[in-house]
Image (cartoon, rainbow, N blue to C red):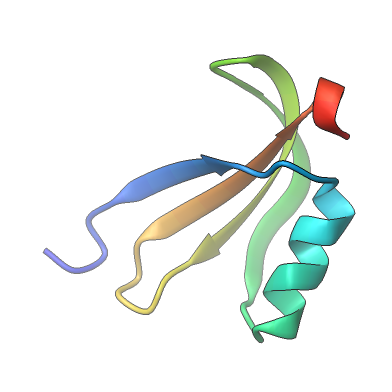
Length: 65
């Protein structure tokens, strides 16, 4: 169903660049930047929604930031 997903994507640059990318596309950030733990350890995430309402996340791990 639309809006039924929750997906996380690893961003290969800084969290500031991830935020700038979202802002350039006029995507509203719902939460973040916020510290989180993911599959690769500690990172910083921002959360936003796609056009169907699914929650999406960009995470930047410390080694990439």
